Length: 625
Image 1 (cartoon, rainbow, N blue to C red):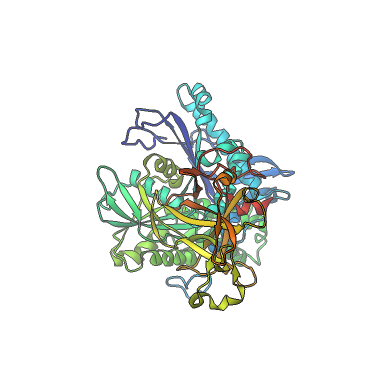
Image 2: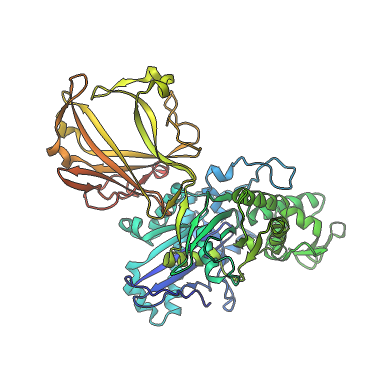
């Protein structure tokens, strides 16, 4: 399938970049062979095992089948197991990684709805003995191995090129707007365990981009309507996928010499994708057929599959009758409109399956746009291909002066191809933080701010009065940060000089990184019982070996005339990009030092020190051991 051709000439090292978008129901892969002094092209993998040779389909089903907890089949081949061995197939497994902010979000009543409940998806159980980490490892391995075969078969001299460049392969993973560093850590670990990237290369050869940002790059490349591409224009990109709908508002800062976009505000991510329409259809069919011999789970599942593959995708609200194929010629039930293995649904019944989902999508977009003047709304993603969804969005937003645009490439998967285009172009230069970030500190006691914890005050080694469990904010939620933004915070550690030799006290220093889901700058990290405050969670720990500072230690006399040791260091944390990067910095005499590289996937810290950015050890990996 012909793909994107960049207008820019590539001047970097020769390499292969592979992007994967693992959706709740469908998955796709794109790749680019980057050659110096040439204009990069992006290709989709359009032939998968189990598909007809002439299908040219870029999407496969997100399914992993198992036998005795060992991978047996993936994608289209695993779909054959759904009819007789469904309990051994990992279905909708992406839902297991959704953070609570998506799964359990408490949001206002949806637009045009009397419901006061957020949508919930029942997460199918994984096959017995199989973990979510294993599913991602197995599926990533399958995707990569087949992409390798596809590259070799479709590229002139492909086998020799792949052998020569295998060590250069970089992976880009598209993830929902609502995912953060915890989900990235799981995927990074799975990519390493799948044998795609070596552990020591995990930080440099695995990148993440939100589905929203990947989709805007795709839209820039393929949209036939270019009127929204001018300086100072504001437009929304709505990526409607299987389980989530990601909406992002962009402002165009420049079109020449290259396109430059920035996020205007915090993006939206709501659990209201196409899979919820399927779940609603299942509930409707079970109720409709409760008195029919075709109301068992097997027949209902077959009906939902038929509904998803045809009716849901073609329905625009005008079809009076909608036939769902599920059985054979002898399957009849006149009372329930079943004839020769097909059940007929009215337009009202099909519209019912979309109702609450679309209401939540509209409500999410309204929150994003607020009172801003937005001229265009770009609708992409698998669920975004639904003509009924587009019609309902047009009914709401056209009167507000907003035109809904779709990208006419239904056989593709926008985020998968857009992720590779993103890698090449990097059009978005500023993003909004979904959370506030910071670390724990001991506040210098201020009666005006800390009176409620006066009983917690301690006297520090330098004689000052400190109160523990405070929070130091590095950047607040919703801040618009440039791509290269780094926050540098200065800290110090002190300890009594009469307790032990100063040099012996030096060693690995840690800084814990926390995310705060609330607004503003909180004073406290923990409550008086030592528990994290509501909305606060531990993300990761940054390590640095400061033992080389021993020669520069000096004894200082404090306010209470007691002697103490003190060392100072800074935390430089890059928050403006699509993934967390951090390092510790300190001075040895007049020379600045950078923290050592730490393998975030190792059970213990590396003993070998080296210059470079400090990788993080995520809290979620520690929990999963």
